[in-house]
Image (tube, rainbow, N blue to C red; front, top):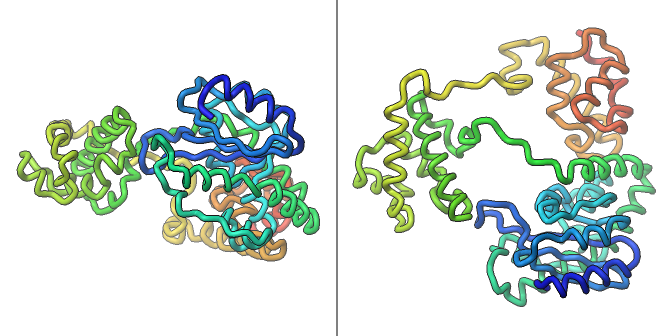
Length: 382
């Protein structure tokens, strides 16, 4: 479906359906600069399965309105909610089958694994990393995409029963509500994103790091203009190698691994200009390490604050033990970052109430605080 008239027909169909609606979206991660949706799949009882090409459409707000009172069923919802929000689609209620499986203690939580284990069907996953911006989409890809929503509501019902059996329905409801609340929240902008260049740890000195920064932003500009994944414009390994070598001319640059391809060679002036700009920077414009918001990396705790390191170890024991008791992955019981922040800077007066308030301030859920606050308050003091 790719026209406004066809969308209106689908909106009417979905509105007349019953029960939850299974929703999925396909992006072109690794191929495109943006994370927009290039295909949206839906299935609802009484309405059937539909595939929507959002590219020629302004948005899907009419579809969103038709589903306003409907529970959405997604798998790994946090991956798809941002690109759906760009289209004007935001659930008011949802059920995340991957998150439900984690809370229920399943070891394998991928859609194919859960479908096979709980429903006895095998799903083909060989198009999961495809370039979904391709047009026209091959028939086999469309079949694959339709199957992603075909069994989602059945999977939802089985997982909901399992959560109920384990007494975790309320926990899941809190998690799902948090996903809904953040569905259209803009992604957090990372400071100095160039510092995440793979292999940057090998680049020594502020001057060399300025070359990484200059090349990273030059590549990002090209990638944005082309709507191409940055790694397809120039690999991280090439940025790091050029930052270390600091080539002054095109011949030297093109001799560096990663710069030999035709498309990269055509951009040689851009790369050389970026390196020259870094070379001309005054010392006070070179990168400096930004103060860290929060505690240092745990491997440095023993050296910087042995008391805090021991406190963190005790807190982690509580988390691991509680997670095992409730058949949960520790990272789903509580964010490891919350525990690090608590152990590094505990409240002045340690009580279950103050510990719980601190965790809630970090973003923990009520159910997590109920399970952990008492025991954490016991082990925080020296």
